[in-house]
Structures are given as structure tokens and as C-alpha cells.
Picture 1 (cartoon, rainbow, N blue to C red):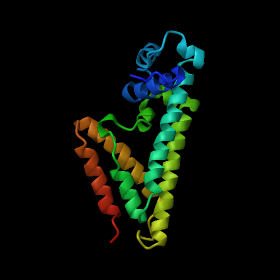
Picture 2: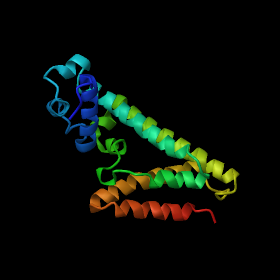
Picture 3: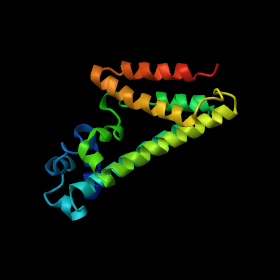
Picture 4: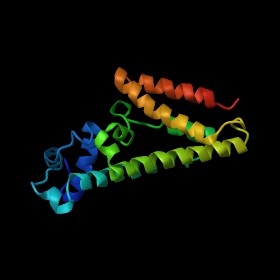
Length: 190
């Protein structure tokens, strides 16, 4: 699964990221991590203090990657509407759900201030960045002046996260796509 040049700690982090996305924190056992990483017993404790420490490294990496991907689209070319549209329409593994958003459904992650922090930080940064873009669009006359950037940003994130839930429940990305199209039609410049 991993090339020979990938360090054991990297394999452990990447395996944990995948397992957290697939199974959540509780469903991600040290044994499953070691098997997925192709690492020997004791490797986790050589590189990390234990499962919580490894999970934190994996969650941070996933959160950083998600923020970078979002910024690549939100900071790209186009009008404010076009950048929000690009964010909403970007390629996603809809039926797998959001690798960060899914962690909010995991009671052990939410109960831990340390594990929850990168999740909260990511959602807050995305909301703030989208709100900036909405305000920019208002200044340019692209969005109605009465719109609240923070509220629109929350709606964008709620559409994405809720779209994942609808798609997973129905077993089809069509539900996600419908939510995105609906929001875009409401935001479309008149």
C-alpha cells in the first residue's frame, strides 16, 4: 500500500486519517491502524504517545489539507459569486462524507477539547473566509446589501455538510447536488 520511502510515522498518520474517515474515532483501533499502515506492534507507541496523540496528528493533517483545498478555490480567480460557486461545485467524495465534518458526529472527538480544536478551527476559518467573500460581493454590488456575510457563510457550510448527510442517507450524490444548486440559485446575482 505504501512505497518503501514512506516513514513509519507517515504511514501511521495516513492510515489513521483514512480509518477516522471510514470508521470514526471509536471504530479506529490501534490494531486496525497498524494493519493498515503495515507497521509492527509497538510502532505507534514509538512515534506517538498513544491513539489520542496519533489521532490528533491525523485530524490536524486532514484539517490543514481541507483548509488548503478550500482556499485554493475560494482564493482563486473570479467574482465573489463564482468563487463561492466553485467551492460548492468542487470535486468531492460525497458519499464518503466530509473527513472533518464527520468528526463532529463522533462523541469521543467532541468530548475532547484537544481533538475537537482542529475541527472547530477549520469550520471557523472556512466560515470567516466565505463571509469575507460575501462582503466583497456586497461591496461590488453582486450581492444584496442587506445580506449578512456570516449568515450566508453559515448557510454555505450547512449546505455542504447537510448535503453530505442527505447523499449518504439516500446513497446518491444527487441529494448533495440538489442542495448546492438550490443555494446557488438563491445566491445568484440578479
